[in-house]
Image (tube, rainbow, N blue to C red; front, side, top):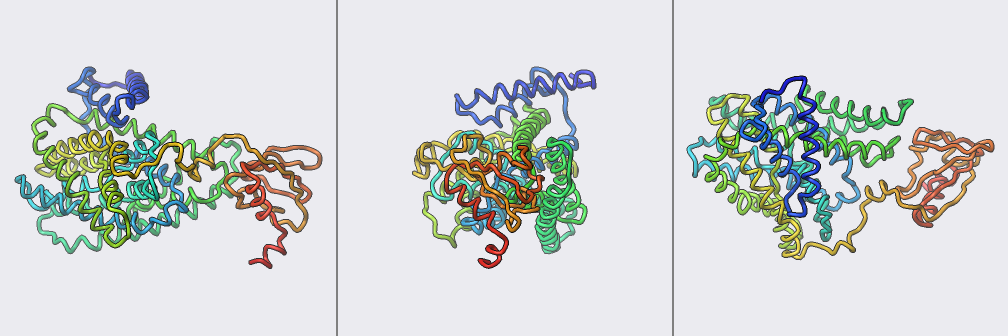
Length: 494
Protein backbone atom coordinates (compact mmCIF):
# COMPACT_ATOMS: atom_id res chain seq x y z
CA UNK A 1 0.00 0.00 0.00
CA UNK A 2 1.48 3.36 -1.06
CA UNK A 3 0.76 6.24 1.29
CA UNK A 4 -0.49 9.37 -0.47
CA UNK A 5 -1.13 12.86 0.85
CA UNK A 6 -4.87 12.13 0.85
CA UNK A 7 -4.74 9.14 3.21
CA UNK A 8 -1.61 9.97 5.22
CA UNK A 9 -3.47 11.74 8.04
CA UNK A 10 -6.13 9.03 8.25
CA UNK A 11 -3.61 6.19 8.42
CA UNK A 12 -1.31 8.09 10.79
CA UNK A 13 -4.10 9.04 13.20
CA UNK A 14 -5.52 5.50 13.18
CA UNK A 15 -2.09 4.01 13.95
CA UNK A 16 -1.64 6.54 16.75
CA UNK A 17 -5.08 5.75 18.16
CA UNK A 18 -4.53 2.00 18.00
CA UNK A 19 -1.09 2.36 19.65
CA UNK A 20 -2.53 4.33 22.58
CA UNK A 21 -5.44 1.92 23.12
CA UNK A 22 -3.19 -1.14 22.84
CA UNK A 23 -0.62 0.48 25.14
CA UNK A 24 -3.30 1.20 27.77
CA UNK A 25 -4.07 -2.50 28.16
CA UNK A 26 -0.58 -3.89 27.59
CA UNK A 27 0.53 -3.95 31.24
CA UNK A 28 -2.30 -6.30 32.15
CA UNK A 29 -0.17 -8.86 30.32
CA UNK A 30 3.17 -7.45 31.50
CA UNK A 31 4.26 -6.29 28.04
CA UNK A 32 6.01 -2.88 27.80
CA UNK A 33 4.05 -0.34 25.76
CA UNK A 34 7.06 0.44 23.57
CA UNK A 35 7.03 -3.10 22.16
CA UNK A 36 3.33 -2.73 21.41
CA UNK A 37 3.98 0.52 19.51
CA UNK A 38 6.72 -1.21 17.54
CA UNK A 39 4.43 -4.19 16.89
CA UNK A 40 1.65 -1.97 15.55
CA UNK A 41 4.14 -0.41 13.13
CA UNK A 42 5.34 -3.83 11.95
CA UNK A 43 1.76 -5.06 11.47
CA UNK A 44 1.01 -2.00 9.36
CA UNK A 45 4.24 -2.37 7.35
CA UNK A 46 4.98 -4.01 4.04
CA UNK A 47 5.05 -7.52 5.55
CA UNK A 48 1.98 -6.83 7.70
CA UNK A 49 -1.77 -6.42 7.33
CA UNK A 50 -1.92 -2.95 5.76
CA UNK A 51 1.12 -3.45 3.54
CA UNK A 52 2.39 0.12 3.93
CA UNK A 53 5.76 0.26 2.20
CA UNK A 54 8.24 2.44 4.08
CA UNK A 55 11.87 1.87 3.16
CA UNK A 56 13.40 5.31 3.60
CA UNK A 57 16.21 5.14 6.18
CA UNK A 58 16.95 8.85 5.76
CA UNK A 59 13.39 9.83 6.72
CA UNK A 60 13.42 7.30 9.57
CA UNK A 61 16.68 8.79 10.85
CA UNK A 62 15.21 12.31 10.68
CA UNK A 63 12.12 11.17 12.64
CA UNK A 64 14.44 9.45 15.11
CA UNK A 65 16.62 12.51 15.71
CA UNK A 66 13.60 14.83 16.16
CA UNK A 67 11.96 12.32 18.51
CA UNK A 68 15.14 11.87 20.56
CA UNK A 69 15.36 15.65 20.95
CA UNK A 70 11.95 15.69 22.64
CA UNK A 71 12.55 12.52 24.68
CA UNK A 72 15.96 13.61 26.01
CA UNK A 73 14.79 17.18 26.64
CA UNK A 74 11.72 15.99 28.54
CA UNK A 75 13.87 13.58 30.57
CA UNK A 76 16.28 16.41 31.36
CA UNK A 77 13.47 18.70 32.50
CA UNK A 78 12.30 15.96 34.87
CA UNK A 79 15.78 15.44 36.35
CA UNK A 80 16.17 16.94 39.82
CA UNK A 81 19.74 18.02 40.55
CA UNK A 82 18.98 17.60 44.25
CA UNK A 83 18.08 13.94 43.62
CA UNK A 84 21.03 13.13 41.31
CA UNK A 85 23.71 15.11 43.16
CA UNK A 86 24.55 12.20 45.56
CA UNK A 87 25.04 9.83 42.60
CA UNK A 88 26.41 12.29 40.02
CA UNK A 89 29.85 10.63 39.80
CA UNK A 90 28.36 7.14 39.46
CA UNK A 91 25.96 8.32 36.74
CA UNK A 92 28.68 10.07 34.74
CA UNK A 93 31.01 7.05 34.88
CA UNK A 94 28.20 4.71 33.82
CA UNK A 95 27.29 6.95 30.90
CA UNK A 96 30.88 7.28 29.66
CA UNK A 97 33.25 4.53 30.82
CA UNK A 98 30.38 2.06 31.16
CA UNK A 99 29.25 2.66 27.58
CA UNK A 100 32.80 2.36 26.26
CA UNK A 101 33.44 -0.92 28.10
CA UNK A 102 30.11 -2.34 26.93
CA UNK A 103 30.88 -1.42 23.31
CA UNK A 104 34.40 -2.87 23.40
CA UNK A 105 33.49 -6.13 25.15
CA UNK A 106 30.48 -6.76 22.92
CA UNK A 107 32.44 -5.77 19.80
CA UNK A 108 35.18 -8.25 20.71
CA UNK A 109 32.60 -11.02 21.12
CA UNK A 110 30.96 -10.16 17.78
CA UNK A 111 34.37 -10.27 16.08
CA UNK A 112 34.93 -13.87 17.24
CA UNK A 113 31.43 -15.24 16.48
CA UNK A 114 30.83 -13.57 13.09
CA UNK A 115 32.72 -12.79 9.91
CA UNK A 116 32.71 -9.07 10.70
CA UNK A 117 35.97 -7.13 10.63
CA UNK A 118 37.16 -5.71 13.96
CA UNK A 119 35.89 -2.22 13.09
CA UNK A 120 32.52 -3.54 11.91
CA UNK A 121 32.25 -5.50 15.15
CA UNK A 122 33.06 -2.43 17.23
CA UNK A 123 30.52 -0.46 15.21
CA UNK A 124 27.81 -2.96 16.12
CA UNK A 125 28.92 -2.90 19.76
CA UNK A 126 28.84 0.92 19.79
CA UNK A 127 25.34 1.11 18.32
CA UNK A 128 23.85 -0.97 21.15
CA UNK A 129 26.18 0.24 23.91
CA UNK A 130 23.84 2.74 25.60
CA UNK A 131 20.67 2.18 27.56
CA UNK A 132 17.62 3.70 25.92
CA UNK A 133 16.17 6.80 27.62
CA UNK A 134 12.71 6.31 26.13
CA UNK A 135 12.55 2.70 27.31
CA UNK A 136 13.91 3.34 30.81
CA UNK A 137 11.85 6.50 31.47
CA UNK A 138 8.59 5.02 30.21
CA UNK A 139 8.92 1.58 31.85
CA UNK A 140 10.18 2.81 35.24
CA UNK A 141 7.50 5.50 35.46
CA UNK A 142 4.60 3.50 34.08
CA UNK A 143 5.38 0.64 36.46
CA UNK A 144 5.75 3.15 39.35
CA UNK A 145 8.68 1.15 40.69
CA UNK A 146 9.68 2.25 44.18
CA UNK A 147 13.40 1.49 44.46
CA UNK A 148 15.62 1.73 47.53
CA UNK A 149 18.26 4.40 48.17
CA UNK A 150 19.28 6.26 45.01
CA UNK A 151 18.75 3.50 42.46
CA UNK A 152 16.05 5.21 40.42
CA UNK A 153 17.84 8.57 39.93
CA UNK A 154 21.01 6.63 39.06
CA UNK A 155 19.21 4.68 36.33
CA UNK A 156 17.42 7.73 34.94
CA UNK A 157 20.58 9.87 34.95
CA UNK A 158 22.54 7.15 33.16
CA UNK A 159 19.89 6.50 30.51
CA UNK A 160 19.37 10.20 29.88
CA UNK A 161 23.06 11.03 29.53
CA UNK A 162 24.69 8.01 27.87
CA UNK A 163 23.29 8.36 24.34
CA UNK A 164 25.88 11.06 23.44
CA UNK A 165 28.73 8.65 24.22
CA UNK A 166 27.15 5.89 22.12
CA UNK A 167 26.58 8.37 19.29
CA UNK A 168 30.23 9.47 19.28
CA UNK A 169 31.45 5.85 19.29
CA UNK A 170 29.04 4.97 16.47
CA UNK A 171 30.21 7.87 14.28
CA UNK A 172 33.85 7.15 15.12
CA UNK A 173 33.81 3.44 14.23
CA UNK A 174 31.61 4.09 11.18
CA UNK A 175 34.32 6.49 10.01
CA UNK A 176 36.93 3.75 10.50
CA UNK A 177 34.84 1.27 8.52
CA UNK A 178 34.41 3.72 5.64
CA UNK A 179 38.00 5.04 5.73
CA UNK A 180 40.20 2.00 6.22
CA UNK A 181 43.42 4.05 6.21
CA UNK A 182 42.32 6.13 9.21
CA UNK A 183 43.97 5.34 12.55
CA UNK A 184 42.14 4.78 15.83
CA UNK A 185 44.18 7.55 17.49
CA UNK A 186 42.86 10.09 14.98
CA UNK A 187 39.41 9.75 16.55
CA UNK A 188 40.48 11.04 19.97
CA UNK A 189 40.25 14.73 18.91
CA UNK A 190 36.75 14.04 17.53
CA UNK A 191 35.67 12.53 20.84
CA UNK A 192 37.04 15.42 22.90
CA UNK A 193 35.54 18.00 20.54
CA UNK A 194 32.10 16.39 20.66
CA UNK A 195 32.00 16.09 24.43
CA UNK A 196 33.62 19.42 25.39
CA UNK A 197 31.71 21.52 22.86
CA UNK A 198 28.48 19.68 23.68
CA UNK A 199 28.85 20.24 27.43
CA UNK A 200 29.78 23.93 27.13
CA UNK A 201 27.03 24.61 24.58
CA UNK A 202 24.41 22.82 26.69
CA UNK A 203 25.18 24.86 29.79
CA UNK A 204 25.49 28.10 27.81
CA UNK A 205 22.22 27.63 25.94
CA UNK A 206 20.55 26.63 29.22
CA UNK A 207 21.47 29.94 30.85
CA UNK A 208 20.54 31.89 27.71
CA UNK A 209 17.21 30.05 27.42
CA UNK A 210 16.31 30.90 31.02
CA UNK A 211 16.93 34.60 30.37
CA UNK A 212 14.85 34.53 27.17
CA UNK A 213 11.93 32.61 28.75
CA UNK A 214 11.73 34.85 31.83
CA UNK A 215 12.31 38.20 30.14
CA UNK A 216 10.29 37.90 26.95
CA UNK A 217 6.64 38.83 27.48
CA UNK A 218 4.26 36.70 25.40
CA UNK A 219 0.56 37.43 25.26
CA UNK A 220 -0.54 33.79 25.51
CA UNK A 221 0.53 31.15 28.01
CA UNK A 222 0.42 28.45 25.31
CA UNK A 223 3.25 30.17 23.41
CA UNK A 224 5.82 29.49 26.14
CA UNK A 225 6.14 25.74 25.40
CA UNK A 226 6.46 26.65 21.70
CA UNK A 227 9.26 29.06 22.61
CA UNK A 228 11.04 26.30 24.54
CA UNK A 229 10.70 23.92 21.57
CA UNK A 230 12.39 26.53 19.37
CA UNK A 231 15.18 26.97 21.92
CA UNK A 232 15.60 23.19 22.13
CA UNK A 233 16.14 22.79 18.39
CA UNK A 234 18.43 25.84 18.27
CA UNK A 235 20.54 24.26 21.02
CA UNK A 236 20.79 20.94 19.18
CA UNK A 237 21.44 22.28 15.68
CA UNK A 238 23.82 25.10 16.72
CA UNK A 239 25.88 22.68 18.82
CA UNK A 240 26.02 20.19 15.96
CA UNK A 241 27.00 22.99 13.56
CA UNK A 242 30.10 23.90 15.60
CA UNK A 243 31.11 20.23 15.93
CA UNK A 244 29.71 19.48 19.38
CA UNK A 245 27.40 16.70 20.49
CA UNK A 246 23.83 17.98 20.09
CA UNK A 247 22.29 15.20 22.18
CA UNK A 248 24.55 16.02 25.13
CA UNK A 249 23.83 19.74 24.74
CA UNK A 250 20.04 19.46 24.82
CA UNK A 251 20.13 17.12 27.82
CA UNK A 252 22.38 19.46 29.85
CA UNK A 253 20.30 22.47 28.73
CA UNK A 254 17.09 20.72 29.84
CA UNK A 255 18.53 19.64 33.21
CA UNK A 256 19.57 23.24 33.87
CA UNK A 257 16.16 24.64 32.90
CA UNK A 258 14.30 21.98 34.86
CA UNK A 259 16.00 23.12 38.06
CA UNK A 260 15.33 26.84 37.56
CA UNK A 261 12.27 28.97 38.23
CA UNK A 262 10.63 29.63 34.87
CA UNK A 263 7.53 31.51 33.82
CA UNK A 264 4.66 29.05 33.24
CA UNK A 265 6.95 26.16 34.21
CA UNK A 266 4.06 23.79 34.94
CA UNK A 267 2.63 24.37 31.47
CA UNK A 268 6.04 23.74 29.89
CA UNK A 269 6.65 20.52 31.87
CA UNK A 270 3.21 19.08 31.16
CA UNK A 271 3.45 19.97 27.48
CA UNK A 272 6.83 18.28 27.09
CA UNK A 273 5.65 15.19 28.97
CA UNK A 274 2.84 14.78 26.43
CA UNK A 275 5.14 15.52 23.50
CA UNK A 276 7.71 12.99 24.75
CA UNK A 277 5.03 10.28 24.79
CA UNK A 278 3.86 11.32 21.31
CA UNK A 279 7.41 11.17 19.99
CA UNK A 280 8.00 7.75 21.56
CA UNK A 281 4.92 6.42 19.80
CA UNK A 282 5.81 8.07 16.46
CA UNK A 283 9.41 6.86 16.71
CA UNK A 284 8.51 3.23 17.42
CA UNK A 285 5.77 3.24 14.79
CA UNK A 286 8.19 4.60 12.17
CA UNK A 287 10.89 2.08 13.07
CA UNK A 288 8.30 -0.70 13.02
CA UNK A 289 7.28 0.35 9.51
CA UNK A 290 10.94 0.48 8.43
CA UNK A 291 11.64 -3.09 9.51
CA UNK A 292 10.92 -6.02 7.19
CA UNK A 293 10.26 -8.99 9.54
CA UNK A 294 11.09 -11.49 6.80
CA UNK A 295 14.59 -9.99 6.63
CA UNK A 296 15.05 -10.14 10.41
CA UNK A 297 14.18 -13.85 10.82
CA UNK A 298 17.44 -15.16 9.19
CA UNK A 299 19.46 -13.30 11.84
CA UNK A 300 17.46 -14.40 14.88
CA UNK A 301 20.02 -17.03 15.89
CA UNK A 302 23.08 -14.79 15.86
CA UNK A 303 20.97 -11.92 17.18
CA UNK A 304 19.85 -13.95 20.19
CA UNK A 305 23.43 -15.06 20.89
CA UNK A 306 24.71 -11.47 20.81
CA UNK A 307 21.74 -10.24 22.87
CA UNK A 308 22.33 -12.82 25.60
CA UNK A 309 26.03 -11.92 25.75
CA UNK A 310 25.12 -8.23 25.97
CA UNK A 311 22.65 -8.78 28.82
CA UNK A 312 24.66 -11.29 30.85
CA UNK A 313 28.28 -10.30 30.16
CA UNK A 314 28.96 -7.01 28.32
CA UNK A 315 26.53 -4.84 30.29
CA UNK A 316 27.59 -6.23 33.72
CA UNK A 317 31.26 -5.76 32.77
CA UNK A 318 30.62 -2.10 31.99
CA UNK A 319 28.62 -1.55 35.17
CA UNK A 320 30.85 -3.42 37.63
CA UNK A 321 34.11 -1.87 36.41
CA UNK A 322 32.57 1.64 36.31
CA UNK A 323 31.26 1.30 39.85
CA UNK A 324 34.25 -0.49 41.37
CA UNK A 325 35.46 2.77 42.95
CA UNK A 326 32.24 3.32 44.90
CA UNK A 327 30.74 1.71 47.97
CA UNK A 328 27.61 0.00 46.76
CA UNK A 329 25.89 -3.24 47.67
CA UNK A 330 26.34 -6.08 45.22
CA UNK A 331 22.61 -6.49 44.61
CA UNK A 332 22.33 -2.83 43.60
CA UNK A 333 25.10 -3.32 41.03
CA UNK A 334 23.32 -6.39 39.67
CA UNK A 335 20.05 -4.47 39.33
CA UNK A 336 21.72 -1.58 37.50
CA UNK A 337 23.20 -4.18 35.17
CA UNK A 338 19.78 -5.68 34.54
CA UNK A 339 18.17 -2.32 33.70
CA UNK A 340 20.30 -2.06 30.56
CA UNK A 341 17.31 -1.66 28.29
CA UNK A 342 17.93 -1.21 24.58
CA UNK A 343 15.08 0.36 22.62
CA UNK A 344 14.64 2.80 19.76
CA UNK A 345 17.97 4.63 20.09
CA UNK A 346 20.13 1.72 18.82
CA UNK A 347 17.73 1.24 15.90
CA UNK A 348 18.04 4.95 15.03
CA UNK A 349 21.84 4.72 15.26
CA UNK A 350 21.72 1.63 13.04
CA UNK A 351 20.37 3.81 10.20
CA UNK A 352 23.75 5.58 9.99
CA UNK A 353 25.52 2.54 8.45
CA UNK A 354 22.56 2.16 6.06
CA UNK A 355 22.96 5.74 4.83
CA UNK A 356 26.76 5.36 4.66
CA UNK A 357 26.23 2.38 2.34
CA UNK A 358 28.71 0.03 4.00
CA UNK A 359 28.69 -3.61 2.92
CA UNK A 360 27.11 -5.21 6.00
CA UNK A 361 24.72 -2.34 6.83
CA UNK A 362 21.53 -4.39 6.35
CA UNK A 363 22.87 -7.23 8.51
CA UNK A 364 23.87 -4.79 11.26
CA UNK A 365 20.46 -3.10 11.18
CA UNK A 366 18.53 -6.37 11.44
CA UNK A 367 20.73 -7.70 14.27
CA UNK A 368 20.40 -4.41 16.17
CA UNK A 369 16.64 -4.49 15.73
CA UNK A 370 16.45 -8.01 17.17
CA UNK A 371 18.73 -7.06 20.09
CA UNK A 372 16.53 -4.07 20.94
CA UNK A 373 13.30 -6.06 20.82
CA UNK A 374 14.68 -8.96 22.85
CA UNK A 375 16.17 -6.57 25.44
CA UNK A 376 12.86 -4.80 26.07
CA UNK A 377 10.96 -8.10 26.11
CA UNK A 378 13.36 -9.91 28.46
CA UNK A 379 14.52 -7.10 30.73
CA UNK A 380 11.56 -4.72 30.45
CA UNK A 381 9.01 -7.34 31.51
CA UNK A 382 11.05 -8.48 34.51
CA UNK A 383 12.11 -5.21 36.16
CA UNK A 384 9.63 -5.60 39.03
CA UNK A 385 10.37 -9.29 39.53
CA UNK A 386 14.15 -8.83 39.56
CA UNK A 387 13.82 -5.79 41.89
CA UNK A 388 11.92 -7.93 44.42
CA UNK A 389 14.27 -10.87 43.96
CA UNK A 390 17.33 -8.67 44.63
CA UNK A 391 15.51 -6.93 47.50
CA UNK A 392 15.97 -3.43 46.03
CA UNK A 393 12.23 -2.67 45.72
CA UNK A 394 10.16 -0.84 48.32
CA UNK A 395 6.43 -1.22 48.96
CA UNK A 396 4.39 1.24 46.90
CA UNK A 397 3.06 2.88 50.09
CA UNK A 398 6.63 3.75 51.12
CA UNK A 399 7.45 5.45 47.83
CA UNK A 400 8.51 9.05 48.42
CA UNK A 401 7.03 11.83 46.33
CA UNK A 402 9.65 13.45 44.10
CA UNK A 403 10.19 17.18 43.96
CA UNK A 404 8.78 17.26 40.43
CA UNK A 405 5.67 15.28 41.37
CA UNK A 406 5.09 17.62 44.30
CA UNK A 407 5.53 20.65 42.05
CA UNK A 408 3.05 19.35 39.45
CA UNK A 409 0.57 18.13 42.03
CA UNK A 410 -2.86 19.72 41.87
CA UNK A 411 -3.69 18.56 45.39
CA UNK A 412 -5.31 20.92 47.90
CA UNK A 413 -3.13 23.37 49.82
CA UNK A 414 -3.74 23.00 53.54
CA UNK A 415 -2.17 26.25 54.78
CA UNK A 416 -2.93 29.85 53.80
CA UNK A 417 -1.51 33.20 54.77
CA UNK A 418 -1.88 36.82 53.68
CA UNK A 419 1.43 38.69 53.46
CA UNK A 420 1.70 42.46 53.11
CA UNK A 421 4.49 43.76 50.91
CA UNK A 422 6.30 46.78 52.36
CA UNK A 423 8.78 49.16 50.76
CA UNK A 424 11.80 47.32 52.15
CA UNK A 425 10.59 43.83 51.28
CA UNK A 426 12.80 41.68 49.05
CA UNK A 427 9.85 41.00 46.69
CA UNK A 428 9.17 44.66 45.89
CA UNK A 429 9.46 45.36 42.13
CA UNK A 430 10.44 41.75 41.41
CA UNK A 431 8.75 39.23 39.14
CA UNK A 432 7.08 36.26 40.84
CA UNK A 433 9.43 33.90 38.98
CA UNK A 434 12.45 35.56 40.63
CA UNK A 435 11.27 35.15 44.24
CA UNK A 436 12.78 31.67 44.74
CA UNK A 437 9.60 30.41 46.38
CA UNK A 438 9.54 26.85 47.78
CA UNK A 439 8.08 24.35 45.30
CA UNK A 440 5.08 23.52 47.50
CA UNK A 441 3.88 27.14 47.83
CA UNK A 442 2.02 29.36 45.37
CA UNK A 443 0.71 32.91 45.24
CA UNK A 444 -2.97 32.27 44.60
CA UNK A 445 -4.02 35.92 44.39
CA UNK A 446 -2.64 39.44 44.83
CA UNK A 447 -4.76 42.17 46.38
CA UNK A 448 -3.78 45.46 44.76
CA UNK A 449 -5.65 48.72 45.32
CA UNK A 450 -8.69 46.82 46.55
CA UNK A 451 -8.79 44.55 43.50
CA UNK A 452 -7.79 40.86 43.43
CA UNK A 453 -5.66 39.75 40.48
CA UNK A 454 -4.45 36.28 39.52
CA UNK A 455 -0.65 36.36 39.08
CA UNK A 456 1.67 34.38 36.85
CA UNK A 457 5.44 34.12 36.72
CA UNK A 458 5.86 37.45 34.91
CA UNK A 459 3.70 39.45 37.37
CA UNK A 460 5.71 42.18 39.14
CA UNK A 461 5.12 42.50 42.90
CA UNK A 462 4.49 46.09 43.96
CA UNK A 463 4.71 47.95 47.25
CA UNK A 464 1.51 47.71 49.35
CA UNK A 465 0.41 44.50 47.59
CA UNK A 466 -1.15 41.77 49.74
CA UNK A 467 -0.15 38.25 48.70
CA UNK A 468 -2.56 35.38 49.34
CA UNK A 469 -0.11 32.46 49.68
CA UNK A 470 -1.11 28.78 49.77
CA UNK A 471 1.11 25.87 50.77
CA UNK A 472 0.94 22.16 51.58
CA UNK A 473 2.29 22.72 55.08
CA UNK A 474 2.95 25.42 57.66
CA UNK A 475 6.66 24.85 57.04
CA UNK A 476 6.06 25.92 53.44
CA UNK A 477 4.62 29.22 54.64
CA UNK A 478 7.62 29.71 56.93
CA UNK A 479 9.90 29.21 53.93
CA UNK A 480 7.88 31.84 52.04
CA UNK A 481 8.46 34.32 54.88
CA UNK A 482 12.19 33.66 54.58
CA UNK A 483 12.04 34.50 50.86
CA UNK A 484 10.24 37.78 51.55
CA UNK A 485 12.46 39.14 54.32
CA UNK A 486 13.32 42.86 54.14
CA UNK A 487 16.32 43.64 51.96
CA UNK A 488 18.39 44.93 54.87
CA UNK A 489 17.85 41.73 56.88
CA UNK A 490 18.75 39.50 53.94
CA UNK A 491 21.95 41.42 53.18
CA UNK A 492 23.03 41.32 56.86
CA UNK A 493 22.51 37.54 57.00
CA UNK A 494 24.48 36.97 53.81
